[in-house]
Amino acid sequence: MTISEKSAYLKGLMDGMKLNTESDEGKMIAAIVDMLGDLARKVTDIEDTTIAISDELDEIEEDLDAIEDFIMDEDYDWDDEYDDEDEDDEWDEDEDYEEGFDFGDEETTIYSVTCACGSVIDFDEETLEAGSIICPDCGETLEFSLEDEDEE
Image 1 (cartoon, rainbow, N blue to C red):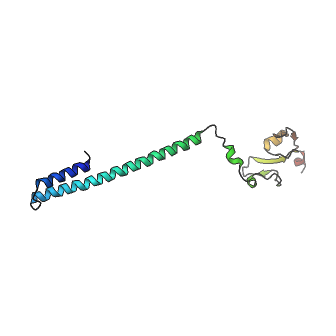
Image 2: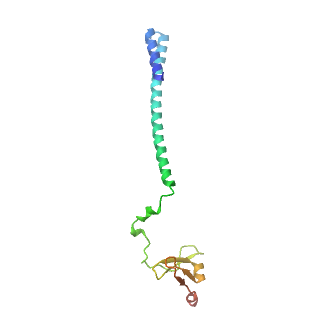
Image 3: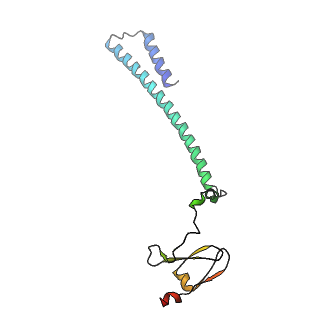
């Protein structure tokens, strides 16, 4: 028997007993039965709300599981997501680049050189002092000389 059913049963008993609701005891019993009826309705509403919230949480959990599966999918190729970007967002190789551009780090200066194949290669002071670098695209060895800088 649910709380609502028990409350209705008690109300029926009170009505069946034909209590005098004008007497002090009758007024008190009638008030208690009415209060139990109100409480039963409130508890039923709370149970219904709890069930609805539980259902929503189950759906959210399923959605989060699906998102987790998508993120953790090792077979997913994230690079495909970026292949469709606008060409305007990519590096413009025709633009003139300033050699020796300092990125604000006093210890590291980044230099750029354009290979005969058209590939732009960035390198640091250490590579410059080594005197050469190999183009990662065509494999050609590019040689550098510091003699011009020393003469100036």
